[in-house]
Amino acid sequence: MLKGQYSGPAHELVQSYGGNVTASFAVYFLAKRVTARSSLPHASAAAFAFMVVQLFEVLDEFGLMSNVYDRFDLVANTAGIALAITLDVILERMSGARSARLERPNTESGKARAG
Image (cartoon, rainbow, N blue to C red):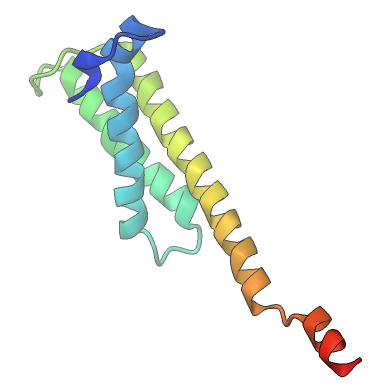
């Protein structure tokens, strides 16, 4: 929706493929909700999202959808999913590290009170 207002670096790329990257990014997180109980949540969500967005693009090629087919949309979709996985893993690791710090007993404060 906002890509029409963008006029910075790589303007043409953002205009052509920004929507694909953004939509694929969002589809990954929607797919993650669907595959949350999977034994491999990242892989399951990525595979599901990849199938959905790539199928949409392939249907464009056959004229079944109203968008214009562009083979580089397939690359942009993959990039959006890869970006989503990367952010998801980083956030999970940060959250896990924070949880570990909160669960670990603070032994230094206990030493200070005892001594």
